[in-house]
Length: 464
Image (cartoon, rainbow, N blue to C red):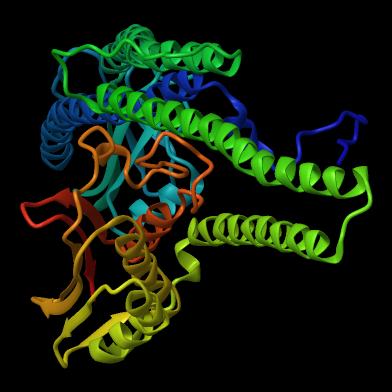
């Protein structure tokens, strides 16, 4: 929009302009406006109290003087002298000046309307002249009607307001100077305080800019002997930096591991095809090559599906809880693995009570299946799956009688592509336990692996 002069004005008005100011400027401006209101109110209160006291004294003197004039006019005696700076006029019933102080002009101090009001018996009080701007001859007068010898007289008593007005003008000047100096001091203190309070924030901003430039292992310098909002912000930012660094490290490790995992089956596929094309092959050899190619393709599909599942579980919005009986949940998870257990001569036992759990069976069933599959492939002896609900939490345990995890593997058992064996050419992608951990996290629960005297135990603890 434009003004009549053609100048552009900021869209949104003063509020938008205020929001665009730096934080320090906004704080100082807010302090200045608040202090201006407080100082104006305080100055107004002081001025009102002083003015009231001066006016009360002036009115008392004026009333006393007018009463003495009234008595003198009624008695027909000489008019008495009044206080310092007092003046008087006596008018007849038609408003003509009968007697007047020498300093007053020979015309009535009252207006025609005031003369009519006094004639009807009213008492008129009025100030002549103003405090500001300064005018000479300022007065305060009172006028009343008096009966003297059967005639009506109008008595006007007045006192000069010079000393009162001068005192009020001096008070206004002193209040203005004091308020201005106080406002300047408060603004300066507010500016220094805001700068000091926001200095750590600026330091944090510089640190964040350094992080954006690629600096590694950056931590903000947070004082250890304070516990205010800025300090807590610094600790929160440091915690965030730690998480970002850990996430970046996991991402780098994930990219490296994923590239290695994908490279291995692709290389085997390329080798099988190259060998098959190198010279003519018999039908049996081609069939064996196709079986090998099919196994590697299936491995790639499984790896891709596992990665997609983990990515989908990264958002808790994909968790849909619904009541499910534990017996049905355990049966569905174990059934696909019973033939494998029978083929290897292993016992697979389950123990689930008849309780109902509020979970997402779509994700929990394959997670339990992964645990059973790991126990059958890497453990020994009987595999046991137990599930029970206690105090609003579902606890599922899968145990076997195997040798357990290597001690150095336990801390990273649930990491992606983590394997207990050093070789990556064995069966499995190293994503099974990572998937189990993702399912537990999506349910706001935990997953824990430990070695016991009987073998290995993996526990899921989920709120239900």
